Length: 72
Image (cartoon, rainbow, N blue to C red; front, side):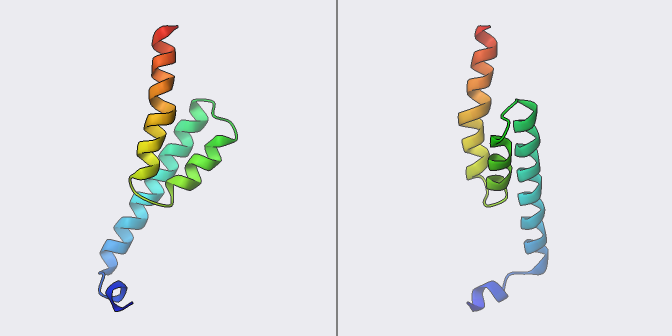
């Protein structure tokens, strides 16, 4: 447990900022794309880790939406 005490404060602040930015971006983009109730899921999941939620959002929401718009 002493390894966590060795992590500098500035790194914790940067991690928190990146997680907040990622979660906010995913949430707002999901709302814009009309994901409805799933926007909350994506946003909260975006706060939990880097970069897995963003990559999954890209693969399961953004790319299919672009393909659908290109077809129409």
